[in-house]
Length: 311
Image 1 (cartoon, one colour):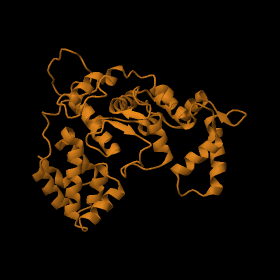
Image 2 (image 1 turned 90 degrees about the vertical axis):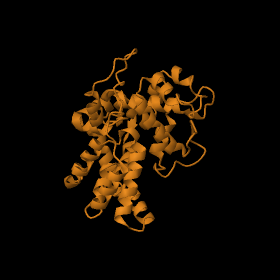
Image 3 (image 1 turned 180 degrees about the vertical axis):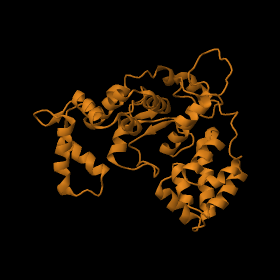
Image 4 (image 1 turned 90 degrees about the horizontal axis):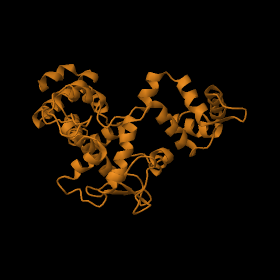
């Protein structure tokens, strides 16, 4: 995958590498350098701070310490980060600018390009073999028996179209995956949006002022949106606590261990727990923590009766 990511242009973001995030124009400068909207850069900056566990560190060093608890410390996650291009000034460092360029690529790359990236990621461009598929299957299906892994991996290789040596080259892998998995499912699996697609659709329907420099993402301005208030979060927490509130937490992106951790922290007080999680959601989502998004989450969680709170 590094072969693909190294082909991206980092010239503009490299000029910002030594600038401080305390500057008022720091986010907008990164938006201008990448073509991203400021709100997208802001969201990625929050994610980057989670990885570095720092509010002002603009460089990530993978070998310094384990990944933070928000990310699984496994070989697949760490190997993915290892493919990120390094700074010209420090070959051990992943600057924030490089991080957002990779995220931008993941957001906009074609399905074929992403599949090529997956192929390169799995074996650094070398042929894929059944033992590699076995490792992947064991990672994906933790309950599978060891005796089932080998025959299943061999079967997968045959279905993907392996050659007489039992190997898959890049073309065979890409075509095999596209043949076996329906396109809509594949796009969902490999899909990545810096800003949720539903929210992008809503924002793109909003009128926006004419800008001097056209930018396809310039419509991402959320200041006109009605953001969720603290009072509304309190009311939702009170009523949701009497229902299946964990479903709402999962819909908003929290994991089971997040919910369990906050339950323990809040002494298993359901109202206090969901309120804390909603506050975290609002803080992390920033300008995209809109009433419309929360309405959709409530509906998906079968809590439609709480939607009028946001009207």
